[in-house]
Length: 562
Length: 73
Image 1 (cartoon, each protein chain N blue to C red):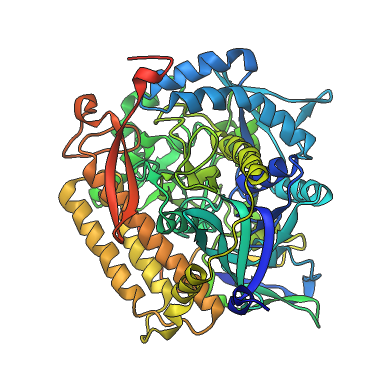
Image 2 (tube, rainbow over the protein chains, first blue to last red):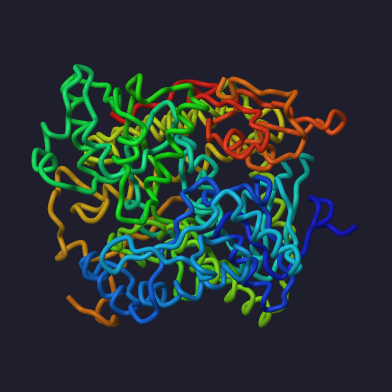
């Protein structure tokens, strides 16, 4: 037994993929095509984890001959704030990635044997796939092709040697063991931060960006991406359908949308579950003391309710609305035609991620990132279309997998640096020595108090964001009084830690950006300011503290110029 | 608690709930071949077990094991 073996169970591979959701699974499958040894690990059980199985099963699609025009449209929508190289590559890759996913076993809705490509709007297309079984299908293929997998391993920190990432430290959630993974290349695909606040994004808690940051990788776009949708409170779920907004009412029973957006009550409009106007109206009503907000479908027949969900996407939202109605009746015991349902604005997600180049590589050698753990600025706030999240996971996963495998093929293995590994393990296990009676859930709750309220995170303003940062600091103080009882608790401690980091970075970057752009709205700087803010904000560790810097958008090197 | 009802009788021990739980709330009792709620307070109401259980064993409510959801307003 050598010195490294004394520190924990050592497992070697060429490519190590952290996180087996959509992005990680695609990365592992693509890396394996280069015939390298690939190990895929996840804190959940592989096949049912991540965001894809619980999502809507929509995959964005762009016809290859339209890809260039698509990229140009996204560029113009984002006011040239996007990384055009990535946008262009992404647009071009979508057809191939869709075909690859089908070949890898993903079940698509088909029409006469071909994948059914549905028209969502002018030049906007999507395909539909079996979301709940998606990762099970891909796992089966990955297993057959020789991808190794380990379930219930919670990766916490990266191992480095000579400036290169050479692996990761993980905790076994079932056996309590410490694992040391040694690889030639590592891919972080653990998602961004959903703060375990609402359904769908409960499993992504910011671990990947946080461990990348601690290892010295750069993050980007932390101020963007925070979003709210309106949904059914008791079900923790949105209600897809374009006409439901007509039936939203306040506590007094007054219809709210006509009050604030009378133009929406005349003629036909498509108002989706993520339409900001609905959130605005709900927020105004609650502020005026007229909350909570309800969806009142009482007295409507099933056919009439189905009509509200009517959509141009060939019955897609109708299907989803029917599914929600079924869930309401069967699971929540609610009969929508007999009682009204409380609705609220659901906070979904924190933004940004590890900055990646066109090859999926982060700013550290040996480290790649994919999916929402990464940020390639492809959208720059443009390109609003269903299914882009999953497609982005697939494409960045394929790109990172291919390039990490190439790197692993061209570089020899660097051993684990025993001293560095020992330091990492000490850091991971150290909280067990804490004294205190705070539970990690209380830290998470405190973080929610900072990130969920719209007064902090939707209508941003300097003094309020400082207040929110104060709450985050309080959460960090509480964290020092969390005394984990066992390794399960220790994993929860580290989840809470990564959520604190995600919230800190979001507000630090949002405070720095003194303008409004895309999903970032500042009440005190309501205009877009291209003169001073045509640049991305990066975050990296310098002398133990986060250093925020700016990176001008290199538009002079891009295809399309303002 | 967030998992307000778990029908142990219906459980066939397939382990999908254990696989999809992001908080390691559920475990498998290998002797009885049944899922067990090991850490009930850690449930974050993601509805994974309820959504994916092929036997329909779970009933999840939005209230967490610890604390109400923070209001967005």
